[in-house]
Length: 263
Image 1: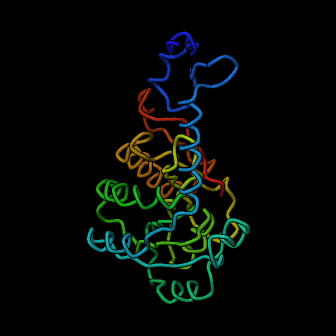
Image 2 (image 1 turned 180 degrees about the horizontal axis):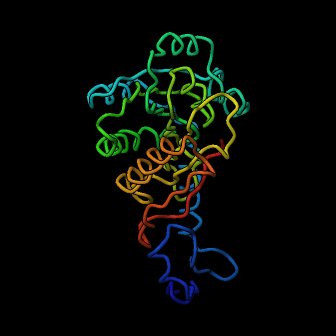
C-alpha cells in the first residue's frame, strides 16, 4: 500500500524547519511513524552516552597549552562516575589533593577571571566546545586583565567552580560545563559566571548562558554575552540576579530552547 495512505501528515510540518523539537511527526493510525520511533531511540541512546562518556583530560590540556593557556587538572570528591551521579553533593567539592594543589598556587594579586572546563553531565559538550569558546572570549577581554590558569575539573558540578575560584584568589570564576543532555542536544555547553566565588554561593549569585553549540548559541554570540557580563560584574562587584544581560537579543532561528544543567 502506498505510504501516503498510511501516514497522516501534520499541518505544523513547516515549523520543523525552525526547531529540533519533536513536533509535527505525523502518525500512522493511532501510533507514531516508524521513522519517528527509531529516531527517538537513537537520540535517547546519544543522550545516555553523553552522560557516561569520560572527558579526555589529556587532550583538553594539550589543546589549552597549544593555544597559549596554562592548564591545571583537579578532581571533585566524587571518586568515579557512578558516585558522581548518585551523590551530586560530592561533585560540588574538591578532593583533598586538588584542594592542596590549588591552595599552593594562590597568587599575591587576585586574577581578574579564572576559567574552569568541567565535564558536568556531558563531557562531549566540554570536549567539543570549550576551546573554541575560550579563544573567542580571550579575543574580547580587555588586554590588561589577568587570566588565571584554566582548570580542567573531572566529575564536576557547577558549584565546584566556587571552591576553585576561591582557592586561586579569583575576582570571578567562569564554569564551562556540559549541560544535562536533551533528546535533541547531547552536546550543549553551559556557562556559569560567579563574582567573588566562595564555597556556599547560591544559584541566585550566578549568571548562566545556556545551550552553547553550533546548533544553538554560537561561540561568538556566547563570548560577546559573557564578556559583557564579566565587565559588568567587575564594575558592580556582584553577579547573579543583580547583573542583567543587556546584550542584543539573538536573531530568531539562531538559538534553540536551552536545556539547563542540573547544578
